[in-house]
Amino acid sequence: MAEPAREAGLEVAELLASLAAGHPEEAARRLAAREEEWRRRPPGRQGSGYEVAELALDRAELGDADGAFAWLDRLVAQPDGRLMTLQVLPEPVLDPLRGDPRFHDLLARARAAESFALAGRE
Image (tube, rainbow, N blue to C red; front, side, top):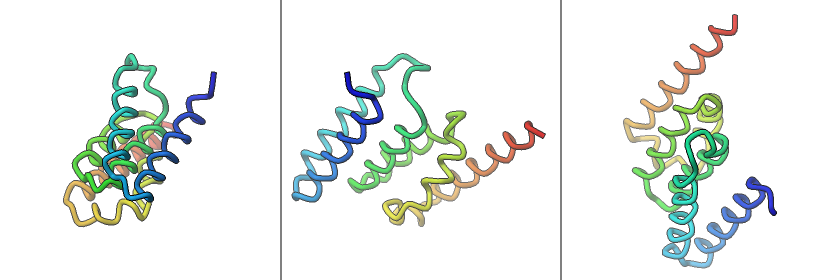
């Protein structure tokens, strides 16, 4: 059985290949299947923030701002997702989202959550 991270990496590569080949509908279909697979997992077994970040970036790659923000919101809500949110926000694929007020709200929430978490460790 393949490792989940490796499988996700292959799926991302296939999605990007579909986009590069001029087949956005195929890329959207592949992404919807990945998202559905993620949603079917029981809570607590949905994987790391890394996978949620990948889904957010993939939605942004498809030009789906609402979908990207939905996944970014999930990411910032995860315990391991706070710092990861701050790490993925500089990604160039998110450039079209930077003018959206939701982007600035997300950034503020990620910073606040990480500051709170760090303060609790002192």
